Image (cartoon, rainbow over all chains, first blue to last red):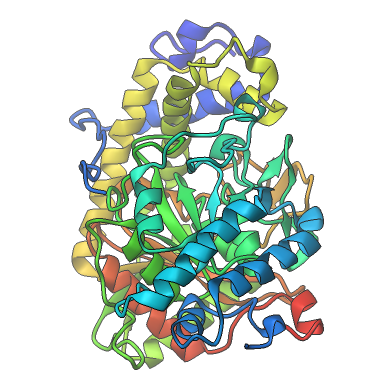
Length: 54
Length: 470
């Protein structure tokens, strides 16, 4: 299977040389790529971790 | 002195009363647990490192505190196990890997310093899935953690040693970490309580991370009250009083939602029945139970896998690939896979996370908490490579099955607790998860405590019941 030109797999070669885990992880990434809505920003570190408190 | 054989499965609260009343010393209690570790650890592999002198020195210091101060903390003199991703000054910390096989930290991270300030006794370092990156705790370097309910089964993971140690009566309580369910799943599968508080409530600075944006520190205990007690001690910001009112927690008037389509799809029929019985118990306490539809949760396993892979890959770049041979095969193949991810993949996963969290936030404006089974299946057999789920055969460790119900709350940062819901016909534990919006830790604890009280009983593995324990 040839990855679509705009897919995450496109930059990483054909799937045949990849391990099952690599293929599974890239498949996860592809599924997310397919469902993300255009106006959705990334969520990174949703809450501030406890700062200097001990 | 209290009969030592009766102590192993007491709650922290019960042990604290014995210590405060001088019916038991911390040294005696610690010695009892050390003896049990000596008896059981060869089979269970719950601990990687136990140093008797290190533990007893802390217990002696705790006994001096108990003899002096009038306002003792309930954790003073209580032996607690720490997952081996939690560094400890003067005690080897491996992360469950050969990469750190000889690391003895010079200093405690803030979280451990807090525990020690209350007089808790660090009894040992608990085994785990290598670097917390996996759900079975089948550790290629330090042995496979075995489930105390059935040693042919895994203990869950990645905090499997912590949960097995509590379940087997090898310590009074344990600390784990949870990036996709790693406190709640082993707690569920070993018949203990596992609580993951709101993201950021426990300082993770200085701990060995798996994924910074989803890592939480959590408590694994025998009771919900113990989980609250330990979690309050670990946190400088969290201070709840959900279980301290004296009687059963009042939950009448609350509403819980059940995302039935997602959360019961493919669930083992006995696990599903036990969860439904638990929901019926909550309803009998005056809780309104209503079904929800949250199709966005389907994205959660993929999102958390990509986020964890990218963040773990960044952390391990300090050793990888130069020391690839020091990693076990399971983790080596995961890091190889992670090295194929792009920045775009990571950001797409964090964008999907935004969609999942928006859906959860919307639902949690309509209901107080979301309830589901914790793990969809009973613990798998040690060495099992594939599992059957929802009519498909999937990889046992990376198939997205065991984390599908827990990972959404690592993405949202909301509090979530697993409390035992019963045993299957094969006498394997199942768990009920109660989760809510960030900051609603007290509500989650209160619902779990009310259910636990109404359910009654205590979950002690059959091996100890046959020996008169419990």
